[in-house]
Length: 451
Image 1 (cartoon, rainbow, N blue to C red):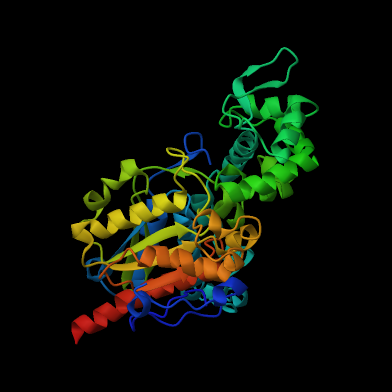
Image 2 (cartoon, helix red, strand yellow):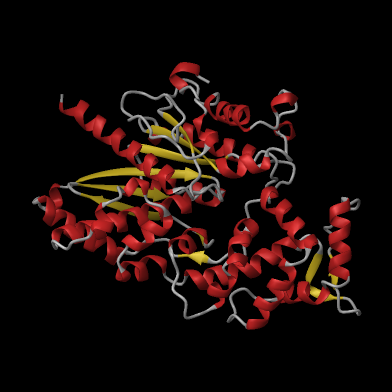
């Protein structure tokens, strides 16, 4: 199942999941009570209003109701940084745009068997891309290829970040080592250090000194290809993408598509849009427009500096969707390397539960990165976070998912948890199920209120 909780009657049953991990059954709380942020590209804090205004107008006209008669359901999306909130918002925009294109085809009585043959909730990314109109693609995707080119530079910076000082080079031309490097590095790190000092010096220096926001140059693609061919670099990448959730996460995708991404005349697609990483700051809102109802999603950020804005943006949300990552149990925070990002996420969770204005809101917990956990758990046992966790289960994703879920639920006290979903936010089917579950929550509440 995509949604792993057995929930209250206000939630519909989830569809079958394509991921084996997501077939785990996690009991609901009612039963158990139990990138470098500073250098990342930055996105606008507000969505594209013209596209949504067009959608609202079409939906309102199609429904035959006045605009002010439409129901508006508001959901507050919370969670730590790099837990998948931005990807979730992007998926919603893709789905809503695809549905809008389908609605236009029907209203114009255009024969579109390719559009009608497949339900929206089964769309692959390539299928979604083909269902979105060209004008909406321009509005949605924007300069995502330029963002991916910046991501390429940031990813290689990140791979060598704790080895070299960007502003200085030795007399031999090799980058100087940072004092932050470990005194007793692992064998893997010693080999990477030798590579940086030796044959890789010029290529590494190119990325360490390169400004990711300057105009792209062909030399960057040449050095990127050369580095990607080196076994030591690929080994460092495979380790780094599981040790943090930074710019290197999607480096393999960028390298596989580098010719197209480096081409400034190329057209982006839906996968580019989802995988391009840009830091979001402040609050962000998106409205999923449907006949007779608007579903408004508001992200106010998970960083400590943003949390004071929670109640300023929306004082009494009807639903709170909290995002958490399944692979943060051994990732240190930037502010305090002795504290893991899972511990930081649990602190934000507890802080959210204490907010008086949120007392009546329903809560949905989203445990993201199920796909990455399945890849990571073999080499990074959960005992790194919980030494008392059974060693025989520490490399098994199913008990680890249950353990992480329990870490959140045991902090709820008497607060009712409505559902826990274990997902991969890059999987459109998973996100569609979450959205359908949210709709079911609001629709059930409306039915009960009318009884």
